[in-house]
Length: 461
Image (tube, rainbow, N blue to C red):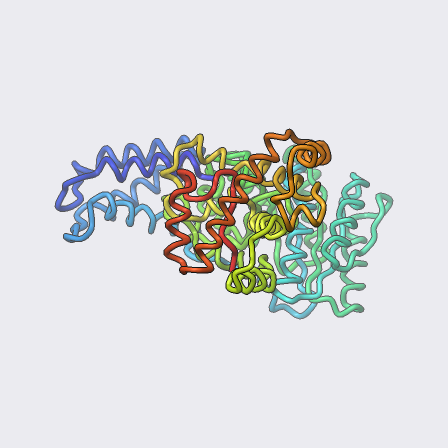
């Protein structure tokens, strides 16, 4: 997300050199580049005009202290205005109401409402420690009801059954009554979407809103619809008292215009952002962290939080203890590392949050963000016997052929994995014997990206 915008804004910084202060003359080109970058990112024109005007007003006359380059001073102004544009700080759900707090989900068909209900249920259960119930009021698509039941089972929350013969208001009121009986903390209500905004759809969801008087009314919008996302959000905001927005499919949008437009056009905060298809791929939206990512400065704080939530600490400690004792790093260890990496969204999930990743050439970024090599490596290791995983040296010709056939790969793929494992093994040996400095030096010699070719990683934790 924001790949194109990050690249353009990075170039703006490079182009500003040698000025003692920022003036109207020396930032004129930079402002034009920022304007073009935002328009190419599909940010709504009124939003672009206001943003550039504010940056200009704040930047002109800013003294550039000796230790800071003019480009850095300018980008600080841009960063602050991006944060302001997207909403200053994360606004969490208001769950302080008398239980059950009700959350009504609205949006067009295909925006990802039902999936977002499942993701939000998981988030509330695991991070907020809430007792959650979900219900579908989409009486037009039986598949939507079945899908939500499947998601509820997957994340282990209560599901209130409904049928296509019932009226949406009756379903929601019955679910609310049952949630009270079961002492549920939060009731999530999924609603029907349409392919476009129409009077019937708005009338129905307004009636549903009146019937349950939800604590939160969230608009779910597909980030990949660009400017249309902001316009659709405005239409819903005019019809309903929205309290916030969930931006979905943000990982598939390299432009990011929706995230920069929605807040200003609707006046409502983006509360969550969906960054993938996995059920855990929903994160609170932090404008300051997102601005940092847009400007190529990474989002290490989110990465640390994600690691704390998703990585297996016991597994990491077990690995560290094994290495300290000087035991060999085998293929079972490599598989565990690859699986830990996958929990963080693969190499792509890491690169998206690490500072300076925007400087890596596009081809190298795309190669590193491709999850297929990692999945292939795990498949190859899974195709081995336990003895082969613990003693890779015994894997010769006939064994390689069998492993390749079992994993649907070629013998050269098996050879490549074994070679990468040897590189990792050497690195781990240096790590166990001489500390972090040796490990970092070893990493520096193992491929231009700093990691072993193919995605090997030092132990997490």
